[in-house]
Length: 611
Image (tube, rainbow, N blue to C red; front, side):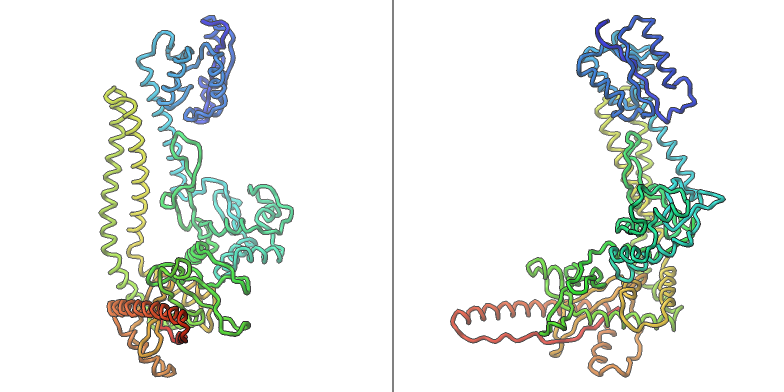
């Protein structure tokens, strides 16, 4: 025994160990170790303590001080009550013991009779494995407790969204805040109307509406919202962004938003959406699911402010190129008069990537009129033929989904079988390691691989199950579109709100020349029902004869015929591009020779929409 070096008495107690267990308390550990040290003649005794720290963590303050003492060469021996006080990760414990051996530091686990000065205990590896199993089992039990509460739709945390209040009779239940809920509804509606988040914040500030933190303080609701701002009416865009992201406004309880990576880690990270626990209709909704989904789609779209007017065009993020799939680029065109510019869209690949696609030029005014007409036609059909509309939606969706769902069921069954296999393999792996059939490095490598695969399978099972659950909900989607139509009495003019509520996306094809006239196909996909083919109807008499004939011809085509026509148009356009390049070469050659050369302007034309 080296009398000049420290004798460190190390005590640790985690929250999981429980304060009611007197035999594990910090005070009991200190008394136990001090008595042993005095009885066995150890001097220079100092305590290093970690109170409230889990044995799976190795950044414990007391433990780090021990490591510093060892690095300085000041430690002769370390006394602990049992090996689990040192840590609950047998691999890290083994590494630490090897470091002690190299530095000549003695370790004594008093209650277990382990003393490295007398040779390593043959059962030490098994005790370390048991300690790790204890940590894993404790983590599993804690998760099970929370899982039981969440299965009943209870709010596990006290986080209360703006727009709700705690029920005075049961604080685990939420009720509507009659003053704040309309503000939340207004924020969502503002996005649908095409307003920027900054503009909505400015409007709320100008109208002197209290911010969430100020509102709760004013009504005496105990909710943690951080430090109060200097101006209780100053709305920040970050506050609005957080409000717009919350699924709770649909009446849902959303749990497991964050989780630790494993029982060895305390760091919380956002969980994938497919791993979150969602319970619907647990409290009153402020916005419906359709509104929330539309707002999320709009938020994901990058909208560039216009140089004139300062607001983004509502069509941005909705128009897509039919050939390359990229979003269309909004730009301001010239009419020859500075006071009367027109707005148009072109393929962003054509605009930004050295003409890697063709132009797909279309004017904003044309798209707006086509969208308005499409919504009018489908809505009119729905109002007059509601039952037939629902049946047509179901027939269309069944053809598309039946094969996909059958494949999903096969994959789900396979994933569940594999997950059960892995659970059995992990159990056998621990047994093999405990009996010495496999070395430690192989054990660690295999366990890590199985854990990773099991987490991946959990996410895959959740995703596949969700796909299957969505099957046979076509009548529900049709009903939602019918509800949307009934909320509007008339469709007199195009607006951002109308576009965002009804339209999912718009596909723009390249324009072609037919009998000298410019034609362009535009596909309009509506929310809930997608691209919907109306049954043949009589043409309206007010339409010009030329337009009527062309429109009727396109309408009578099957999807295969339309696809063939598009392929023909692509070939024609490719020839047109080649001819244009040849003309440009001829122009350059003519300029070099000093010869006059005429460039003819592009002819104007019309666009037809399919829905």
